[in-house]
Amino acid sequence: MSTTTDRPALPIRAAVVGSGAISKEHLTFLSGRADTKVAAPIAGRVRLVAVCDLSRVSATYGAREFGADAAYVDLDHMLAAARPDVVHVLTPPHTHMAIATRCLQSGAHVICEKPITPTSADLETLLDVASANGRHLMESHNYRFNRPVTEIKAAIDRGHLGSVREVEIRITLPVTDPTGRFGDPHLLSPIHDLPAGVIHDFTTHFAYLLLHLAQPRALPRVAAAWSNHSENPLFRFDDLDALLIGHNDDGPVHGRLRFDAAGAPDGFLIRVRGTGGWTETDLFQPYNRTVRPRAGGSQLSPIVNHIVNGVSLINDGVRNVGRKLLQQSPYEGLHRMLDETYTCLGAGRPLPVSPAEMLAASKLVDRLLDDGVRL
Image 1 (cartoon, rainbow, N blue to C red):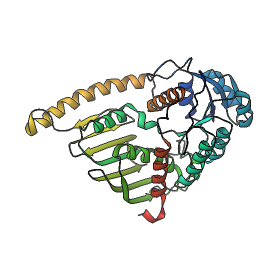
Image 2 (image 1 turned 180 degrees about the vertical axis):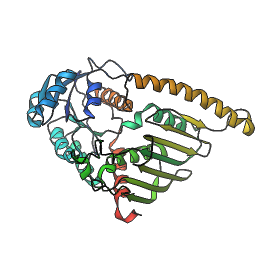
Image 3 (image 1 turned 135 degrees about the vertical axis):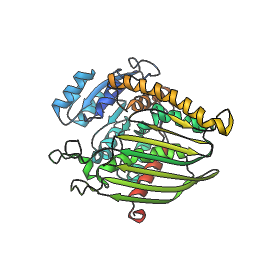
Image 4 (image 1 turned 120 degrees about the vertical axis):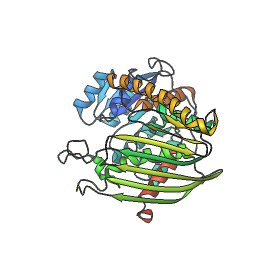
């Protein structure tokens, strides 16, 4: 699969298609309002040339609020008139394939929200379109770039945890709440039509985070229990409990993926255990806690771990108070990912999420949905 080598002239011309909730995060970055530290000021690097949506009101509001050059309600008109170098596809998942194809064929690179396609076979088709047109195609793996995850990955890479033996990822969200975006019977979302319903919208996060942190060479054993404990007819499933067993270069590695709609409080827990220690975070209330052998030997290590982690938790608590006051969301990793992406585009380098990483995550989602592994 070939990749493009040309570099768009600066500033890179960016367009956004779709003005749903996630568009605010993309537009905040593209307008230069992101709180996350970036490599260089957005002005001069990126120019927001268009916001496109089927709703003229939404497109006009988005363009005016975030300083885009123009608003459009027709995709082909936008591609011809605004001539974007990059298009952010932020529409419902069932529209991604057709919209991304048209953008790639028009000569634009595409950054697409997850899940980029329903299946890995569809993703391979879309990647072929990108290759044939010499364009980049990248799915948003945004939580990989959140500060706590980058710190966990750095600890793994430095050998602080030894060899990774287990990665657990647990999301707790009340998606069946009738007052929420997914549970309101009078405001149905296209997400309900995905193969696993609402939970399918989270499976890409599960897959890419597990693969990024565990780095398995193979995962031959996968078992997934999909349930609808609430018996809410809007939902195909409201609960997932999956176990994956494989191996990396020097031993076995286990994965545990858990989605729970009934627990509280909301959480996005990631825990990594290795032969030399373990570490954890919650992306909704960010912190990093690490337990490993410390100076002083086995007798003093527990005490040192308590002290070190206590200081760290206090600092993270203060930082989280600031996040709440500033109304910052867990999408800080999205802004970092986009910053790296535009830096790579400007330098003619490969993008931070590779086609191979996208395909591996998509194939893992396929396996989790396979009736043959269902408990």
